[in-house]
Length: 141
Image (cartoon, rainbow, N blue to C red; front, side, top):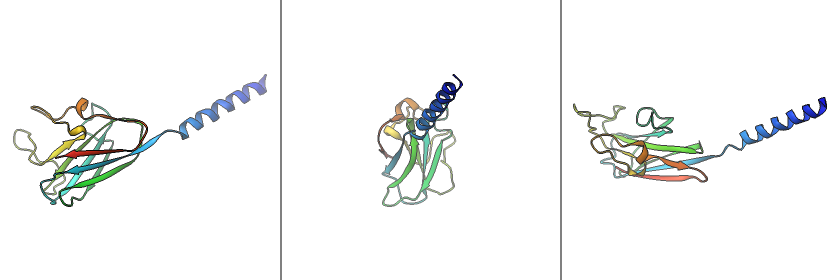
């Protein structure tokens, strides 16, 4: 009986280890079009939940702009629900500049080309599912 328990525990351990190794990941390529200029940099944020959307990204990247276009790739992203945010830091000061009312002075966008009405874009409009293949997301500023 003792040998049976040891074999069962070992089998369960090997199954769990195999499942962990098979965790699926994919790449998300993000292309941003229609930047106002090639000045500054494009900031990319990958978000994985509604509460942190537009506040804190799980991954961030900064890329150059050429011919009013910028792109990046988030590699090895686990299967799940995500949203992308971008902004064009045209004056290269490392932040999205806003006016006295909090309205952005620099171009920004989100996945699904989600736009806010009287406020920022909403998670429910920007989210997408990463399930079974690499994705390419295009955002128009």
